[in-house]
Image (cartoon, rainbow, N blue to C red):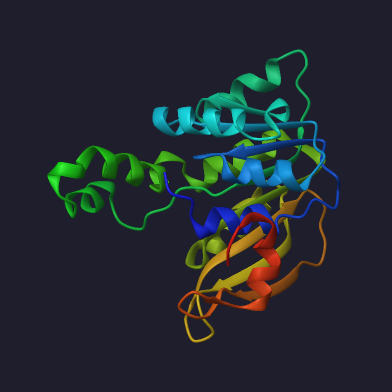
Length: 235
């Protein structure tokens, strides 16, 4: 699986001011977000959940080959199964930080797949599943995160901007309130496509910001470079 801008953004933007001791990455894919948070924080336990077989194997390999392998662990599970079973474990403690780059597609999965050639259908199917909303509906993500989060914990996600209001409303229904929102644009003239969101159980006055990624093709803004500079060899 390719490493996308969305994952790098949420891994770099998510606040660790509350000094989380335990972190959960939902839908980890390659493990990039968990790895970024391992690099940024001193959390003793960083767990990941990945349901896709190939992505799970790749995530495990990346964890084992990183300098933080002793703090990283990936579960081969859906978040629904994980949220139902994990709290029953005797040594379970709620997470201080939960982060996710959840899947999303606005059109049916089969329509996405059928646009591709049959020769690459298996790989394209796996890639599509990784970003297809029905594989992890947003309300399932929110309910499970609220169930697994500590009282002082934070939930951080990156989602399409056109569903951000609905996502925030659903979070409010489960007593998760917006802390921070960052609207992301590709360039200054392009529409906002992504939103970075943070929530907690404490009601507050949320802060809002904007981030522009590029001035022109491969010419990145100073704000973007400052945010992700610790994760790229070249910019």
